[in-house]
Length: 548
Image 1: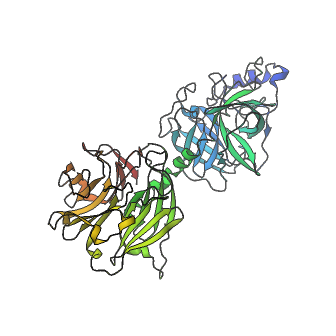
Image 2: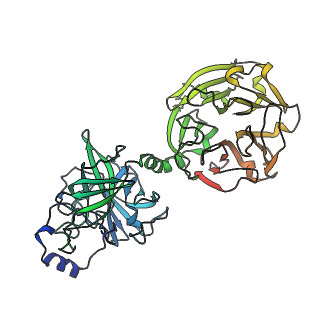
């Protein structure tokens, strides 16, 4: 079998020999020549397939790599992202290993133009490629979003043996080396394996140039992307030995990559948010998942215009891209209307059991509110912990919820006050903030009045959670294993007068490994957002930029 390698531009002599040479009757099959050969040659256009009708498969993409050095096909799965084969961008297509980042060769994508002789659609550059590990699949980012074309949906239903799929591509046909039109043909699924499937053209083959092209299922009147062309025998493709009549191919499955596709295409959206306007953050499992699971912690952000956004944690361990989707929980008000979220002074995520995590909010009038559960649909189970306009809670300066007592829920509220006191309110679900349950951890003093940000985390492996403090002079301190008995020593992770004086919003959560809340996310004074993964007693370690 030939590998799915981009088609190389042939010389005029090669074209004449291929067209004029005698070929066996079996080689002149109708249909698409599959995009990848099962030998070390790139797959080309679907040979034997019929030209796609005008307006059909407008999500199909023609990729020109290296100014004609290679040619591949693909499918638009988002206005700015294309799904195709990794081998198209690999140094050696036989071993399709690609490094994430800008493509090695200048690459342009033509989208929405199934007849390349026309002028419809969009032609734009490719800015980066993101490979999926251990599979001949890559996501390709376009320099600008494509308008007027509906992306194809990635299916969630696995292919089945005997199923018929439609394979499309811009590759070679039985009679044309560089066809102008997209071709399509029917293929039967012979075998379904882990990460790939074997298909055979009913009267067509996957050819050079078809590499990365989509294998599609029609479901409920719409097309779904099942796999992308990887390797094939290329029987019947122009230029293939006439003795080769096999029309089988191997495609890389994508039906199980939906979460990864969503995460990758969301990357520029998250990074481009107006982070200089983020005023508060809170972490928790609001959209599903739990410690040790595949989905990592989510993050809630309150913005300066009173909008509230929920960012869903991703499913992989890439610290550069910790979130995969977003949901608006509260809209910014349009004058003269107002929003209660204009009055939020502090927020912190908490766990009260029985479903998704919740949120605790201290308002500017001193009211303290518990939302027992928060999810992508909003705030649920509202409970007033302290009444508005009370005389106590307006003096609270910072709050954070964590697992600081015998309860296994993260619903113990740690509070710093304007007189330097530090108090712990265990088990809010049972006790609320009743004074009789309150534990005094630190008496009045002049030191803790300089605690600018606090966050509960799990950095030291103690039985109870730790406390991360950013001080007004830029020092950063971890207090290990805080409990109802008080603070137990401290670990300095940043000295006084460090650049952490510019840390405007700080939070901790399980955003990367998801075994414990040991990652720290920071919004800086310049509007940048960075993440420190796996913080422990030895320091903050590597810093990753996640927001512009």
